[in-house]
Length: 132
Length: 132
DNA sequence: CGGAATCCTGCCTGATACTG
DNA sequence: CAGTATCAGGCAGGATTCCG
Image (cartoon, rainbow over the protein chains, first blue to last red):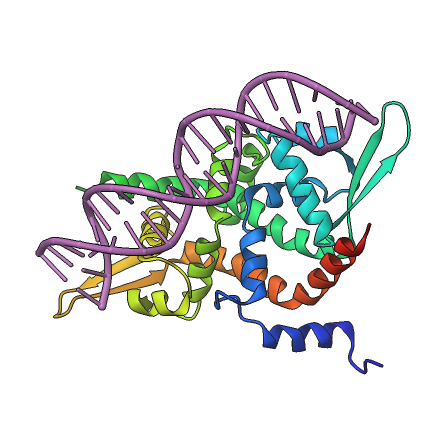
């Protein structure tokens, strides 16, 4: 039986992994999470369950293929659940798991950062481009 | 003269942007930040200035092309500075700006999350793949 | 050492069409 | 409505070579 709390177990686990190493599984995980659709899907689900069509509408510019692909991967990784309601027409609902919620908090920070510091970035670009 | 604090200004600015809109500049910024090399470079610089060769060694698997390209973009966006010391051989040092540091804090959270929850993700995958 | 320039491959992505 | 299947192209990204 485990004598560690979940938090202690995570800490011990973290010490064994290093995302800087190319072969480390966390490196592959980090690569997968570093995806614009992943970020947007997670943030779109932050307030609760959403239907497929709701997500497609909210996340402007995503193709059906990429949305489905992203949702499947996130489901496989245990970050969200997919629920099919047998009605006519059929309804499919996606919802974050507790694991997904913990990641969503990090992702939301990224989105907020982008929206908060956009001005500073645009100024930096203008300044950089002005140089001879 | 501005009558708002920097924090207030950022908040007001944030309200004008929405990364869910495909045409919004923050969406493009979010796309750029959702890059594995960006994440790793920012985290690699968290403890202070680093030379080009140090970064190349630390971030296993990155090609010279991608490392240079990533560094250039981050420099243009005002997230880090590039300093050339005219010696033989030449030395180039990269260092986070205050803006870069604020983003680095978010990025570090992503890396820590990946390293902390790797086990849970692997279990979820095994469970998903076991289904008929 | 720290790049720039070039070439070239693959797979990511979008568009389209079809189904339960 | 919520997908799957297929096809085609474009550019991300690796490998290589050369330079100050």
